[in-house]
Amino acid sequence: MADLRDIITAYGSGLARVAASYEADPALQEDLLQDILVAVHGSLPSLKQAESLAPFVFRIAHNRSVTHVMRQAARRKGDLPNLPEGQAETPEQLLLADERARMVTTAVRRLPLPYRQVMTLVLEDLSYAEIAEALDISVSNVGVRVNRAKARLREMLDAR
Amino acid sequence: MPDDDDILGALRADWQRQTVDTERLYERTQRRQRRTRLLLTGKVAATILALPIALWFLWLAFAGEGSTFALAGGVLLAAFPLMLLELVGLMKLARLGAGASPEGALRAARTQAEAALNLLWSARVAALLLGAGAAGLLGLHLADHATAAGTVPIALVWLGVAGATWLWQARRARQLNAEIQRCDTMLSELEG
Image (cartoon, rainbow over all chains, first blue to last red; front, side):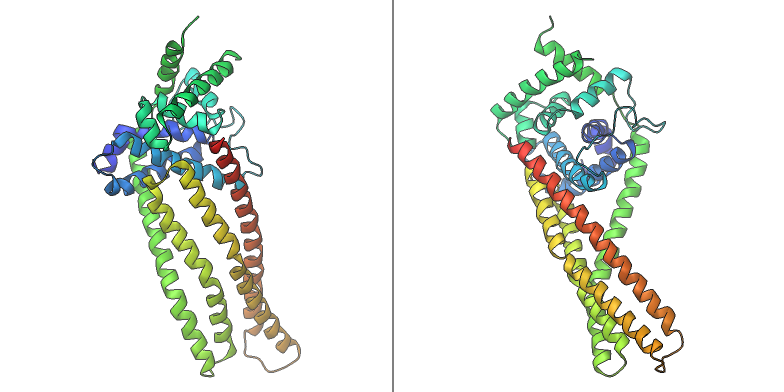
């Protein structure tokens, strides 16, 4: 699978959701998503046969996303990566979603970084082994983070 | 009370209901890919050309063709390390892809930001050289020495570029410091 269209068909929505978990501004979200897709497409020749595609693709997505947040810090005067809720709405919003789905994304975006990373991949149906491969952490560490992330998410969503 | 699996299932359903228009995304990403290639090609060409042009200017100045060449050569030579670092950083970042974990990617980006911060002196030197050159030209003009026509506008352009370069490096230093600070925060979060 080396065609950009194939990658977008298979992973476009998933990658957009990961980008949205790091970036609230729709224009910057799309910028980040395109950056991720260009990086994935450019990195495909380095994909080893033994590696599975999903962890490879999502590892790149998280790598690009953390460096995006780092670079945006300077432009945002302060270190909060997210816009206030509701400010990000535009007719051209990248992700087509209903209110409930947006609420989940906002809650995921508010998770601490280690929990957010595992939770986005759990929500994308990756197995613990694949998440461990994507984030270069142990499978047991994935389990611990997922449990804590679930508890935090539950608190946040119950409080609404 | 719903158990953990039910909660996760409900979250997953909500999460995955968010989709993108793949055709629109494909077109925009293709445009982005072309723009990225063009930008990289331009930067490679500018960096490759900067050093020989700087040396050629300096050689012309040495051969008695005028101090303007010495100034232009000096400015280009001073700016060269920063141009080279920016290009290397851009290429490294493009290759980073899947080769690192998020922590590794952050460390690499931090190293790059630190190196850029340390090399901002070259922009300051270029600005000072241009400013000094402009001041020299204006000084000659004001002292009523015979100077070529158009000396004042040229000196003012140099002065403007020097001022803009100085402001740019100060802004860039602030940005890079903020990036490094943010990077450290994220790394400590990840290392928890």
